[in-house]
Length: 203
Image (cartoon, rainbow, N blue to C red; front, side, top):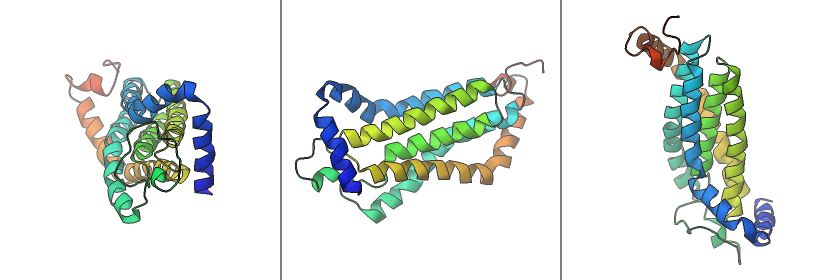
């Protein structure tokens, strides 16, 4: 089923040449947008009525991206799934052919980790954070699709990557929440650093 769906998306890619440049750019560089989304999330988290928790969550979102990426590496090497273009004859590949393994997708892991971090922050934060989390969800799904569209991943690779990234962020937040909140609270108690946690320094 994974190979069949890959073929269908790859055929769609072949017949939509007008989108190749954009999709190739999104598949390779689009993951960088999550750094901007998390940064924007931190900015809005400072305006929350529970800024301590919200800012701590955005801080964890930034860190969780690297943790999730690190967790994914042994999984990639253990599964050792070859890239689909090595197995599917005539596959259209729109970007450089990676020599590493395919499952799970690192790009999807990063997208899933950042997105879940924003949803956690949104639980404590203002409406703008929910909007950012929704936008991040859409972009995560789009970039995951783009990775399949350009021919370098099976659909299962990106689906697993999104789930792993989200799981690492969720589990890590429950394990490290108290530490993150304590750090955010300590920072907020220093006048010079308080604006990093609370936008209204008079509150």
